[in-house]
Image 1 (spheres, rainbow, N blue to C red):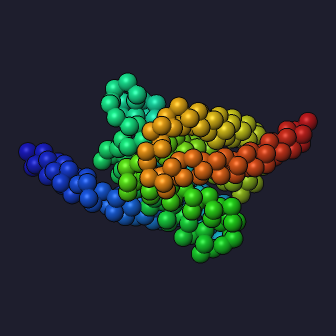
Image 2 (cartoon, rainbow, N blue to C red):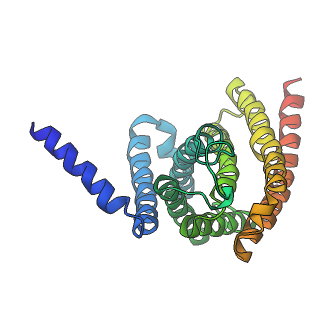
Image 3 (cartoon, rainbow, N blue to C red):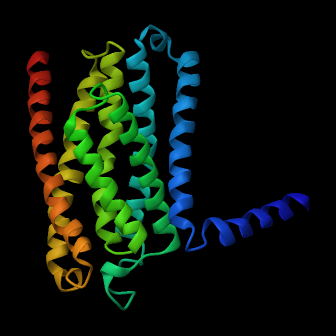
Length: 267
């Protein structure tokens, strides 16, 4: 009986405080930042116990090891949420709701975006603090563009559908991080490394090339609705995805060259 009482109280707290509309953005950002810190610390503790190679890494390699665990967890979280909202949920469906698709949002979508903003803040802070060990200027630009776009959609409720479409591209992050882990563990010549390269190629092609083409097509079909957003919202919905697409194409070229090298060595 007492357990049910605590569950009820926790549910009411979630509804009245954490999911109260005015507080959602700030609460979710804080949750995102603290989640990053928790994942970082748990990764550090568990890696010492379960991965012998971890203790042989340099201090900077350990920091990157823990940092990549954060981005992996965030990628899994936001990819699952984004896929559901874009392709399964009725919230952004043209058939089930009346009104502008560019202005639809909910407490849960705003909370999910806030968690993502918290991640980008934490990760960008680490990139700048340890610059350029965790990534060069292209990572700084990528994170800034992503953070501003996600924060705008979270705070205004505008263009959340297209924000989640772009966030699906995070599905490539776990594979990229796994590649770094395999390389660091001295498994560059293993079969797992080769399979990982092929998976990254396919995931990148689908989520960062083909999906962006679908996004641009969707924006084109609904541009009469996009134009009714604020000027900044229109800019973030049309121009920022183009800039990200250019970066995705550049990185995709590097992925193809790397995969070709790996396959050539195998032969």
